[in-house]
Amino acid sequence: MAEIRPLSRAHFDSLWVAQAGQCALCGKGMPHGRFDVAHASIWKKQRPTFDHVIPKAGGGLDRLDNLQLAHAVCNKRKGKRQAGGSDGRLAT
Ligand SMILES: [Zn+2]
Image (tube, rainbow, N blue to C red):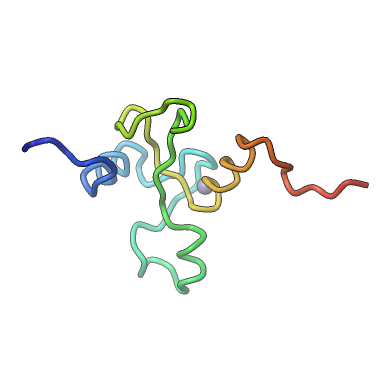
């Protein structure tokens, strides 16, 4: 089978090159590997993750044209917003 498995390393690499290593959501650079950052805790927040342009819940597919790379924190924030949750702002 020559088919690329969903969310494989090949997907990651082509998206990384297409985005020049920048987060699709905030536009800032992402560390490429664990050892590009000083601490595991920073890596956990800043690591590049797959983000679905159209969420899987909305019928989006695991395909390159529906994927972009984003910081783990940015991805999480976006996911929350789409779920209709609060943005964390305190009610006054
Ligand atoms: Zn970001």
